[in-house]
Image: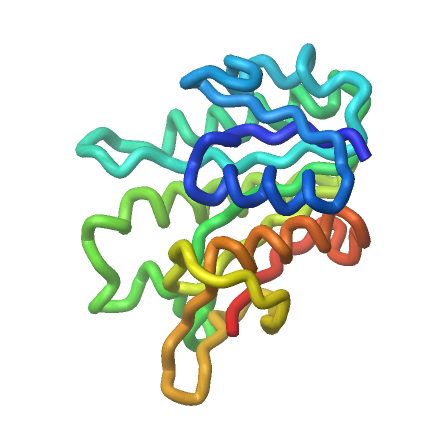
Length: 201
């Protein structure tokens, strides 16, 4: 498949690109920092033409600015650009903050949620709400576990829906390598159109 990947130079984006390339897919990486293609989601309409799938691995900023408005604008531009390019499939790297830890209670709203991640998690939740209103594209929003970090690629993990997954000791974790496997699996199988999924051990 021909795949356009935004955020290709980030920690997660690099691993998604490597996993897809190892499976024989033609991946075009896009980053604001440049290489292989310099650009951002505002360029989607032009860059996505002729591709089978678009993946967004962009993330909200963690600095002191309010990220929700600009991040939502970026996701709206992505949706509009994918439509304009005639691409139906869109996979979005999401966050864990919008996952439920109890009925009606998201992780980001719990008392012990780290303040440093709160703004980006709220922005991610707003983006998810945006996608849930999109009915003409086969989007999939993929939330990682509460913890994600570089590590081993095992290819063995659980796939869930809107609820945070944790192991028997209460830890919610996945390596970035296995998260990339989950993204690549979704690219190839298209098993969860217009859904949010999550992956963890």
